[in-house]
Amino acid sequence: MSAVPWTVVILAGERRGGDPFAQSLGVPHKGLIRVGGRPMLLRVLETFRQLPGVGRIVVVTNTREALLGDRELHTALAAPEVELVEAEGCIADSILCLAGGRRDCWPMLVTTADHALLTPAMAADLMAASRDVDIAIGMVDRRVMLTARPGTRRTWLAFRGGAYTGANLFVLRNAGVLGAIGFWKSMERDRKTGWRLFARCGPWLFLLVMLRRIGLDEALARLGLRFGVRVRAVLLADAEAGIDVDTAGDLALADRILAERGAA
Image (cartoon, rainbow, N blue to C red):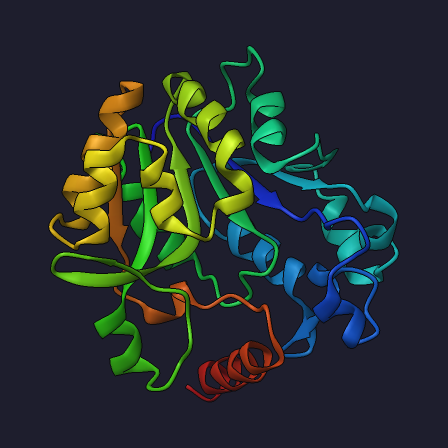
């Protein structure tokens, strides 16, 4: 995957006032929601501790005490390769702060604490496919998702030739991506509304996306040109890469999938 050890960043911050879904379950932090009987942040941590090539795992949070209050998670966070750091405002600020002049943080893989179904193979596929780009974005094709998990509800981004959902997996290869992250900072509030991102890049690209006259690869290539970086969508073969745990329905589905894995 890379001769240089990877830095993995797990985003585990909480919005002001807490996460409504976690609160509905009586849990102090979303990452502590138990999926398959274990806190889902712990599952994400263990995925990367099993993955060859990872040198450092950084958990970014603004709720350190809540995470350390869980006994299993407290033990995992104390591992020598794991670092718990304070979130810096928004997601982009946290990444910019981590990168801040350091050469040993690249390449970087970024994911979220609610990616309870993540496996080492999913992450390895994205890392391997990112060798010749600056930014790689893990995605799942709607056809793949609905074939594997009929009826699954996700947020879909539609382009010519298909529709896709994000996999909450991103590779940032080098310091050249910092300008693009600065742009992302201005967009972060709208990060789940893909068309607004393209609207910020000019009316022509926006029109092509909205009319579905441009494919995903070409749209991202044009977006990358704006910042002088090479951007690629990596379509992951495993539909479960596109399932995070945001709702009671997601939680039930994730529990069922983990039970299936255990049975297999």
